[in-house]
Length: 289
Ligand SMILES: [Zn+2]
Image (cartoon, rainbow, N blue to C red; front, side, top):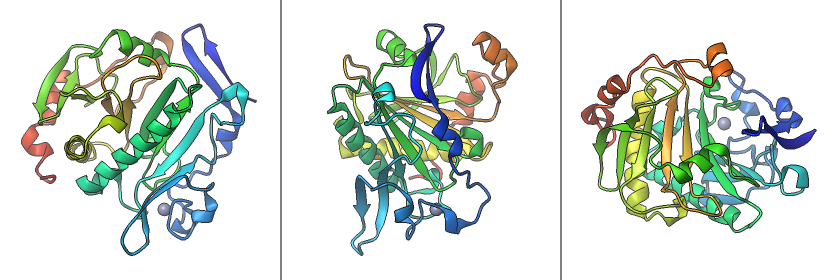
């Protein structure tokens, strides 16, 4: 079965039994990694690559081999792609250079632009799962881009309510500011907001991407000191309507359990004030600049 439905008129549910057949490579031998150089034929035909002067690739984009939406399925229409962020199997996203991360952000924007060219695509979701505790099935650094045929509830809400909640300002660069939301769902959750008018990743200039990359690298390095799994979620403007591009970093330290499932309420063991102190600007940027 391959379809999407709305649960209780509120949450979309995409049924994708093929997802259950994905290989899980954590702790397995490197040779089976489909994202490593030499194994390119293990992925569907790539749609984009960034190449070094010696001809080797350092970023690739391929269709997801286990998509939950696809262009040839009218019942679950869309695009589901994987961005292989580096050719190095054991290098985490936050260990890449800021310049490299800035290129990954640029690639996200290129695919976002492509998907919004299809008017049936109503929203492009860009997200990164790092570590098995964050939902990653393959340890090799990658992110995902899903162009879907509906505007999800959280994005609809953001269209009316931006920024999403009161937040404690932590620090600002020239183009971006970092804040601890007053209503986090995860311990040490932080959000990154633009201070200039940017509604899509593809609208960013190099200077915007580079500063954002420095901030992401610094924050995620700090996160990796306390937990080995995190998600980065990108909010972009849907096909219709505008919201500023912004980012949520969700360290996966506390588990959502029965109370959260039964109520939609979250118990979070770290206060926003503690989170703000945790991302002290001198600590975050000690290994970045
Ligand atoms: Zn690999």
